[in-house]
Structures are given as structure tokens and as C-alpha cells.
Image (tube, rainbow, N blue to C red):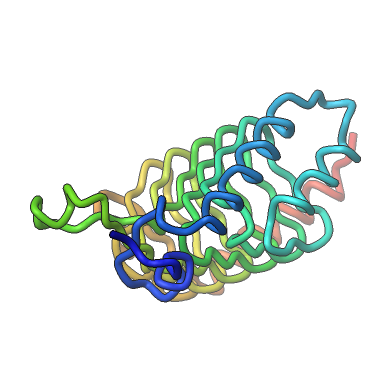
Length: 207
């Protein structure tokens, strides 16, 4: 009933059926194995964790850290820049591309969903689904328990408040929060002045 190019359909954002393509099944099986191995590691196995992430992800920069447990659909469709940190229990459903920039931090239980299902129940019960890519810029901090939905782009230097549900694009240089997530305010030079003063105090009073 289903074609042999389901992976191609999936990555192009069209409807696809996950059981119709042997390559998809192979990729998914490999992901499950690598995630299971990663989640079974201890804090003394940092080098092994790094090796497993290199095998799991599409690409990653230096200093890419996930605190286990982690959960992925495929892993190979996720691309992460330099100096990334994710706290516990990250979920990335990467049936389409997830691209994360440099210097990005995730709080615990951040979820990225590229996967979606048809609203019409008759089509949905055919087990057809789709995926839209998610892009996160550089220098982004995503608070804990945030959900990022299919097709969303988050700009550079953004702070997403904890517990947010991001359903639409967020522009660069803002603080955003809520369900649905919305821009609260811009990040201004006063923010930089305040935090640079805090930094200077930290280094001047190291006792």
C-alpha cells in the first residue's frame, strides 16, 4: 500500500508512512540502540558518551553535552553547533531536521517535536504523518519543560521561559514565554550593562 520513498517524503515535509521504508526502520533501530547505550552510561564514561553522541547525531560541535536520559526518534536528523548543553530528560522527535546553533543551553525536560499528524481523523487513522523542521539560533537559552513544535524557528540570543509551548517563530534578541509562547520584551543594552556588572563583581570578589 505504501511506497518505497517514505524517508524522502518525510524529510521533505510531505505525508509519509513510517513502516513503508526499510531505510527508516534501519535508522530508527540504530537510534534506539544508541539511545539505550547512552542512557545506561555513568558519569565516569564521558569519552564513551561523546563517542555515542557522534554516532547518534547528524553532526555536533565540540563540547556537546546531554545529561541522560535522552530520547530521539532518529538522532541522525539533528545537527548541533559548538558548546551545547542539555539538562536531564531531553526529547527530540527528529523526523525532520533539527538544527541547533552555537552556545545553546536547554533546561531539564525540553522537548522538540518536528512530528505532526493530520487534523482530519479519517486521514490520521491511516497512520500517515508529517514532519516540519525546527531551527534554533546561536546563544539561545531554553527553560525547563519547554515544548517546541513543528516548523518553529527561534532567532539568535533568545531566552525562552520555562514551561513555554512554542507554536510560532520567535525573533532574535527577545525574552519570550507562555502557552502559547509570545514575546515578553526585547533584550536591551541595559541587560548587558546589568549582567556585565554582575560578572565584574564576581571576578573582583573571588573569596
